[in-house]
Length: 348
Ligand code: NAD
Image (cartoon, rainbow, N blue to C red; front, side, top):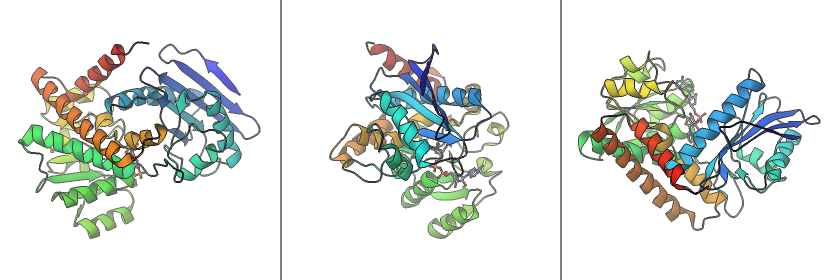
């Protein structure tokens, strides 16, 4: 059952329920001004419906900004399912979600997010064609993480040019927090670029392989943000830039893949006051959605198109940093302003 909720900040919001499979979730379309709303499907345990609704509203709004910043003809949307993906995820539940997505007739496109895998996307695709992040098929885009890492590297180069007058990262010391899908690829690219690495992860196996493969130095996860490095790269969880961590950061630049790195908008100003260059996360980590967009938009051949978009993202980051420096405000503020201007320019 798909029930429409009236929420003034978003174009369309739905509660999704299916008694038979136990599905409970939400789909939110924040904006379709630039194109169909696109953003992943997340499954996790929530404290209740209100918490899940708040998450889907925030995440879908974030996708409008990320898609616009990546220069994509896509709006912002997101879907969430309440429940533990390790125990409550069944083919019947996924197919019920697939049917709900299909009823939106392409105004919302889904893909993988937390708690979902390419196999789950394949299950959804049995009910709807409005799903990306598949592993097989003509336009399948597979794991977005390598492209996300390339985008983050490009952003770091833009930041290096702004701070040190050169894009060259050789000899720069980067502290990477989180060595999962993106963090690992980022370490690989940084190592190839001649950077020196300090790394931390909660999973000792991830740390051990990065130390072995890339000569990285292992750091306690509790103090990776405080390493005396040139760049701090959050690639694990959100909220790591907060009133407690910011005074301890010694790097001149923060640039990583993690979503929602700032605990609150005021933390962007706290970083600026400490002369730390914070590269807005949703601009730096847009490579993943570029990869998915190639699948949604049926782009062929995909590689040159993706390369072009990544170059454009790096140029956009350079522009944001230059404007922020010129106006004496945080890059986060400029990034938001550019997207809001972009959305206003599009006729509804
Ligand atoms: P992942 O789950 O593969 O990796 C996260 C890693 O962080 C894991 O190895 C985990 O052990 C580690 N970790 C968790 N908490 C930690 C902590 N407190 N300190 C140190 N390490 C910790 O996730 P991922 O796909 O690599 O994504 C990383 C971040 O980037 C997430 O915030 C994600 O939302 C964001 N992101 C990912 C993509 C993508 O393409 N995968 C795209 C955009 C944004």
